[in-house]
Image (cartoon, rainbow, N blue to C red; front, side):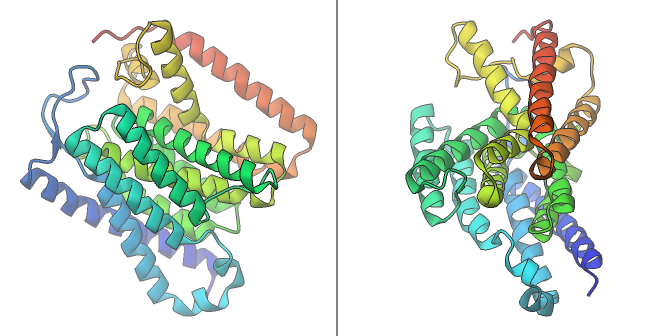
Length: 341
């Protein structure tokens, strides 16, 4: 079978599965009053919105993977490139654990320390299970770094998820472009991207369902796990640059909002309207304009990340310097727009 047709079919099938699963998840959430009431700190909606969007993404991914696997079983069994990809089973098992934790937090609202401890324990299991980098060629260093990276990205994605469709659109671009530029993982990337596209139909402004902590934990883990596994044939410099570029928007949000809260004398883990997307709305941009602008920036830095291995050292350093300079310019611009509670 033509590989392009194979990947396109997987993507479209995943998009349909993601939309169907999200639709029924939304119905279930509304029926059982699993909703997000208007937030006085980060106010984006005036009426309750269904939670459990992460469950829609997860089951869309699971269903589309099974259908693709069963439909094209010969291709899975005979194509060596497909067999050597990042294993979906790893993502499903560990992703389900993070999804469950996030949904539990949505329902019960865990205290920050308890939530972090549970994140840490699940992360330890995932790294032990095989979700880790090998860029340091030292089991202890790679283990510690992998734990750090998964925890960082999960919480960075969670911090970013305050604007309709923002996290889902960034995730779609990340996995679509990685699918196009990384031949060892394109089927998996297209299936993940497709399942998120199906969710985005309901999550785009104005959203009728949110990712919730369950969804942000799930997508954060998917991104962290995928980026870590892709470092296995990279040296330290290429690996670090790859990780930073692919997750650049989320890392920017994490560092930006944490710094602002600390500067204001507030606990960095407590909610505040200092998110970059809210400041951009204060500056007069619509949610759709923010999504478009951020996805374009994401696309550019993800392409640089995917090409990191084949460009020479000088271009790598120039790319990193440009990333820092542009981030600093954006940082300074965002500080102009203070969002009141």
